[in-house]
Length: 599
Image 1 (cartoon, rainbow, N blue to C red):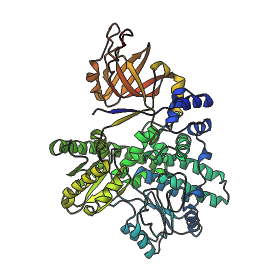
Image 2 (image 1 turned 90 degrees about the vertical axis):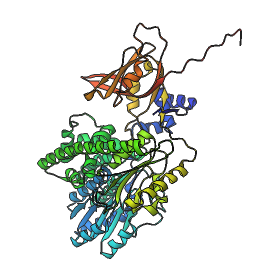
Image 3 (image 1 turned 180 degrees about the horizontal axis):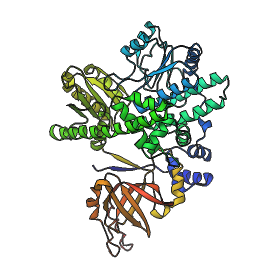
Image 4 (image 1 turned 45 degrees about the vertical axis):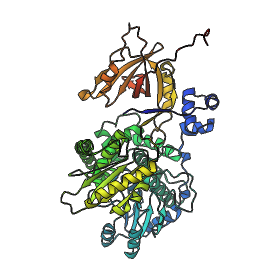
């Protein structure tokens, strides 16, 4: 689909001032100004986040009361259960607190729901089961803020329920023993972007301070917290929360910890996916290699194995779990592609794309663990909010659905307007889950499309490419791109910068590359400078772009405009700048010059 290029506004004066005061490239200064960074000190904080940029855990709303209650439970030898969630954020959050309480010799266990059998969040059945097994204190991580009825049941069962969460706060708060949440009503915490693992890390930090009877924790607990930052970094990147403010410090130093002090289980996983010998692990490594494997365990109903991987002290068990979880990820890919093809077929046969503002697709036999990924792929491809629903084969249970917004609407709001047709729903503005009876499917589809239409108004849905800066190829030398790399960690609200170069030539025919010839490779030339480009999964660009190929001796003036991410290719000790191509189009015809005698 054709994409709309949007150029981020540029304040030339601010760019020049920042470039001079911070001693950075004008290109990098332009990118920072676009992110709201205007002075040298703010640039330092952005480019070189320090651990001291993490706020005192006691400032987090509700944490002091929750940490006091949990520490008392530890000292009294109460049976404590960490109640997690089945995605990478929930699993890393669970592991952080389990490892913390183990280090303090607490009586701790964990419970993670089964994605294929249990509803999202705290379950009444699970609470009853935990109470019957003698659990006394339940600490939720990455869930619970909407568990109104479950909190009442916990109190009736005599359980002390401590909720730590970061999801959208509803109109009513659960009646829990304590609630920790960055956006808790009545508080003014300056950053609401922490994920579940980030909140759990702050909780663990506060518990370690209480155990040490000092703001400065013991050397052993300091090592634990540094290792825990690695897990928090995985959860933060995986949950696609903003990589701004203290999340930058958490991820920046957490990624270092993943290299220098990984847990036994994480080390085994890194070895299994050939990341164990890397000098550094990036947010992209987490987002595209580590987190998907942890999520695969959750998607296929075995989240407890991922938590066991991150909490075990047995090297042999860790190795076996890493191998198995990697295999689960391969299974997940197969299932995902099967559902994607079936959903794509349904779109072609049953949907009117020009008149439907949203897609609601449902099928029997679709694996509920992969529908969220498929919803995301289809929402991106067709630029429409998408709901994928896995229907029960025998029609006795509600269908399980997953929704993605494509960046246009607030899914949480849209689903709330459709709640009358749903068994349950919950989630974020960008991603949500739901359950719906098959008999209500048609009514829900219409209600959801109406809700989306109302939010969209006159907005046209077309994919946008936000260009950070325009540059010539000769400006992108190694030193400049190394400065761009300092803007890492990249992720939500701090994507890897996009640069546009106009009127470049294609001196050689583009080629396919990689296994199965799925990827694109080419070389571009501009003003005497040459740079290699690759585009993953874009083999079809080879034929589309070939018509613009001009060999070295051609006198053709035909050129193209490109948008790309500059990267550093480090191969056999040789470092050079390359580009990951994002989009391209033929250059517009130059405006004719007016004859001054006729003007």
